[in-house]
Amino acid sequence: MNAISILILTAALAGAATDKPPALPFESRAALASHGKIDDLAFEQWKRLGIQPANPCSDEVFVRRVYLDVIGTLPTPEEASQFLSDQAPDKRGALIDRLLARSEFADYWAMKWSDLLRVKSEFPINLWPNAVQAYHRWIRTCIRDNVPYDRFARELLTASGSNFRTPPVNFYRAVQSRDPQSIARTVALTFMGVRAEKWPKGRLEGMAILFSQIVYKATGEWKEEIVLWDPARAASRPPRSPAPTFPDGKPAHVPPDRDPRAIFADWLITPNNPWFARNIVNRIWSWLLGRGIIHEPDDIRPDNPPSNPELLADLERELVARRYDLKHVYRLILNSAIYQLSSIPRSRRPEAIAGFASYPLRRLDAEVVID
Image (tube, rainbow, N blue to C red):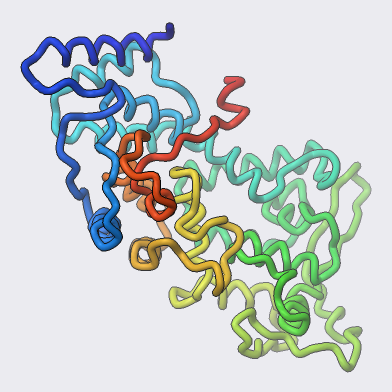
C-alpha cells in the first residue's frame, strides 16, 4: 500500500470515529456548492435535466488528482500530509496556484502540446533531433512564461527562418505532406479543432491558397532547412485556381507585399472568430476532465454540438476578456465544483456523463506511469 492510500484509509477511519455520518474515503461530507459562473451553468443544466450530481471529492482524492492533472506526478508523502492537515478554507485554490507556478507544469504541458504539434524526431514526421530540441524548448518556454495564446498561435503560423534557429517554423515541417491542402488541414485541426477533409472541396482549396507560398530550402548543415514565404510563388499559381478565402467563406484580400499566412493569422485570432477561442478552451477542458464539452475535441462541426453551449461560451468569453491567458482558464476549471466532484456517479444516464455530473475515471498518461 503506497503512502497516498494509507493517508486515504487513515482519513476514512478517523471519520468513522466521529459522530458524523460515515463517508466513503473518496467523498467529502461538505455540501455541493457553486464556485463560480461555470458551476452555475452546469448546476442549471443538471436541474433542468433532473440529474443528480456526484458528491464533492475528498481532500485525499483532490490532492492526488490535481497533482497528476497539473504537473503529471504524485505528491510526496510530505506534500500530501501538509495539505491534508491544512485547515484553511481556501487551501485547494492555494494548492492550484502553487502547482501552476511550478516548473513541472511547463514540463508536463510541453509534453501535451508536443503531441498536438507533432514534435517527433523520426517517422512519420522526421523533424530530427536538433529541430525537436529547439521546437520543444520553445514550446516549454512559452508555457513557462504564460505567453498569450493568440501570440503563441500567430508565431507558429507566421514564422520564417531556420528550423534550428527559429523553432516555430517547425510547425510547417511537422506535417506528413507539404502541399498547401495538407498544411491547411493541419492548421484547421490544430487551431480550429475541425477536420477540414470533411469540408466541401472548394472551401478547403480556398483556404489552402493562403499557404501556397511557403517554400523549404536546404542548407549545408545536416537536416537544417529554411522555411519562408516566397511571394514569387503567387505568380506561378494556375489562372483558374480558387480565390483565397477564409474558412467562414469570406474572401481573403492578399496584397502582393504581404505574407498570406499573416493575413490568415490576423483573421484567426480576432475575438469574434467562431473557432479559435472555442477550440482551445474545449481542448483544455478535455485534457482536465477526460472529454470535451464538444466531444471529440478535434471534431468541432455544426452537427456535433456542445453538451453545454452556455458553459463553453462562458469559457470562450473568459479567455478573450483575459487577453488569451491560458492559465486563467486552467484556474477556472481546476477551482470549479465540476472538476472537484467525486468519481462515484449518482446518475448513470448518458446526459450525466456528457454533462460532467461526476469526475470521469481515466487512464494515466504512459509517461506519467513511467515517471
